[in-house]
Length: 107
Image 1: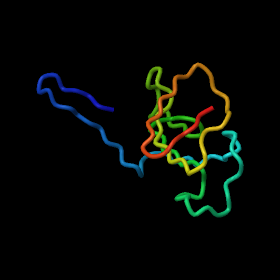
Image 2: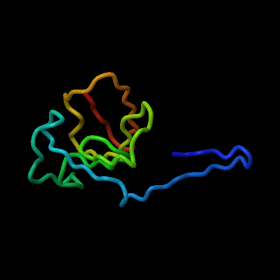
Image 3: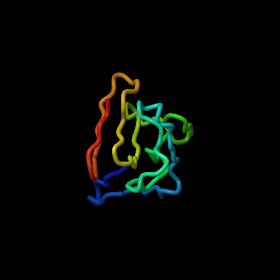
């Protein structure tokens, strides 16, 4: 979250270290994917997805870290090669994804 100080025109940035973020590595079947391969040299993580949650979402519930208005989710996701988000349920959501490297599908 970035907050501007109008008097000094400086930004006050709150940084949360990665080790303080909740880490989720969900079952691939939950997102319409096949099971994880037993060995794939292109994978850098054992699970297809490694998410770091910035605030309460899914299996992470921390009432001190919730209620951001209409914003429901803000995650840093590491998705392994040849994977994406297959068909899974949600509704009334606008999803914005910033891909750093490669391509991503979301159904």
